Amino acid sequence: MPVIDSSYTPPHLFRNGHFSTIYPNLFRKVNGVEQTRERVELDDGDFIDLDWSYAPGKNNQKLSVIIHGLEGNAQRQYMVGLARHLNQNGWDTALVNLRNCSGEVNRLYRSYNAGVTEDVARILHHILATQQYSAITLCGFSLGGNLVLKYIGENRTLPTELQAAMAISAPCDLYNSLQEINKPKNFVYEQRFIKHLKAKLYERQVVFPEHISKSQIKQCKSLIDIDNLYTSKAHGYKDAIDYYTQCSSKQFLKNIAIPTLILNAKNDSFLGDQCYPYTEAKKNDHVFLEVPVYGGHVGFYSSESVYYNEKRALEFFSKHTL
Image 1: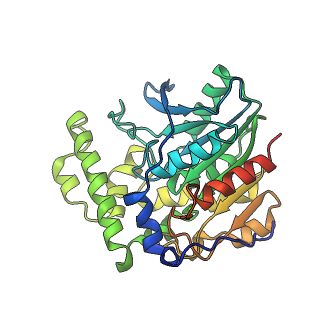
Image 2: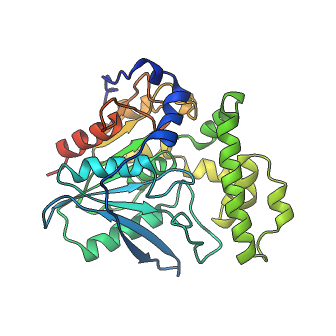
């Protein structure tokens, strides 16, 4: 599908990618979303927590399952902002807290990464076994966007109820994104990620001292160090490069067979050139690629209470679901 021309033009300050990225995280406050938590027990003995919010009325037939980014959770403003907009327009939402992201250390040494599509499959299976929805969509932010694209592009039979998907600020090439984050312009972001990930690893070390030591964690100075020490090994990959190679969603886009929108801003400082899948989108009628000039990383500010990515999600899902 040809690349979509984008109409997104924010106020002047928000044309700066860094400002657009940082502002919602520091200053946006989304009110009016009431969440109900459900714990989903997984086949391997672990769990994932879903935070549900509902549209007014009863027996709503449409549901959007939404997945957060690296070190996110279902309470992040970008998550509840999208949930609120969908709820107000007749959609129920199930916001996913990936393993170890709901405020409680998960039971196993493994946790989450950009390619754990078996967890997405399990969540959808649980929902379809316990709820009655005629139309379901998937939406992922950043790491969650890569996860969504990989899931729908793998060689699997998708539920017939799953009718559309969206990925926002998705690092379709994980190693290329890592290289971009390593650049000096992203030093503050990178250090923040490292700080949070190492804090999680120290928690994990207390529970699983036989798998990892404090000295190993202390020696990690970069994201690839963490992925070499923990992410890759805990999830069955040889090393970080093997993890990035196998889990990057770009290679799966050719197989996608449901309407899918990828919304990646051109001034997203986390995405390198390989994260904009122009060629793949042009070769697959089901893949729609929108690359606004502005938006930063999960930014897309609007002077209204509804951000641009939230408007686009509702438009796209409404158009492509029965």
